[in-house]
Amino acid sequence: MIDSAQKRGELIGHLEAALELADELNGGPILPRASSPHHAVNARAPPSQSWRTFLRNHADATAAIDLCVVPTLTFERLFAFLVVGHGRRQLLWFAVTRNPSAELLAQQMAEAFPWNTAPTYLVRDNDRAYGQAVSAPNSRDGDS
Image (tube, rainbow, N blue to C red):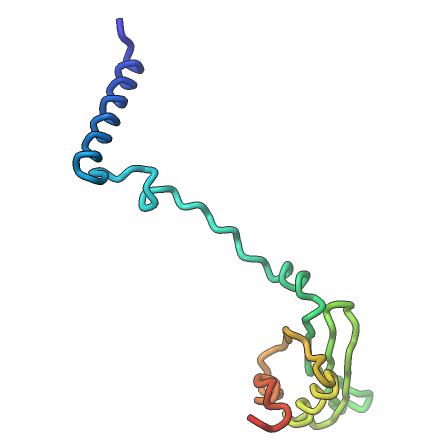
């Protein structure tokens, strides 16, 4: 007696042989195969790196800037401009002023990164106090 698994195997073998014969006669496959790129299971792309991984990989080329409000003992407000390097986690530059302006902050950026030492990546908040000088790094010398 022939069991059902053996019958199924024979039937699949005959079907595959018939499809191969049809492919040869017609010059191409009639039915899509699972091995064709259209019906193949898509391999998952590797996940993109996380923010933490990005900072670890590019720490030496990354700096962060911030403008902080510092209250004094007489309840006046001073503004501290800080530049922190992520590579060695050190304070690269600071400046304190009573009246921050975009021009002053642009000047402080130029002094914090003299010559061609500006970082590749600059982390900052989207504060209007920075003006166009920080968002357009090539306009530091007034070329715009």
